[in-house]
Length: 148
Image (cartoon, rainbow, N blue to C red):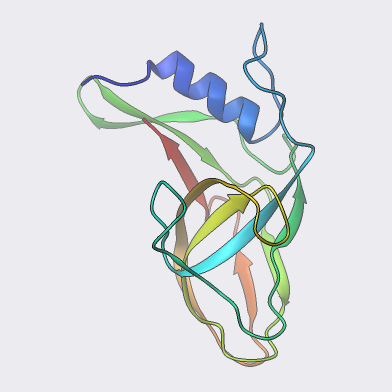
């Protein structure tokens, strides 16, 4: 299957999520990132999804370090066809909801607290219903970003 080589996928994932640079560096990684929650997953271009907009919600600021993101790994989807993956090394815990946020099915990584550019998105496992007083908690390995 045509696409990025496995080595290129891992190098880019390690750079973008965890700040581990390759030699020579491909891109300068951001020191911080913002995690967004979605009730409908966005497309690769960042459109088509539904980010939570309820009262009391805001994106979660996280440091872009290897303490936040696990090392990239390969997942075999078929013989000779691997996906580069990156997962969260720490739980992403949002403040208690002050209103109903809906069912969270995906998360995204953005460059800003509002607006900004979506860097990546992926499913949240397990999905979670966030009602009044509930806490959105993406467990370790609960947010999976892939690159192929």
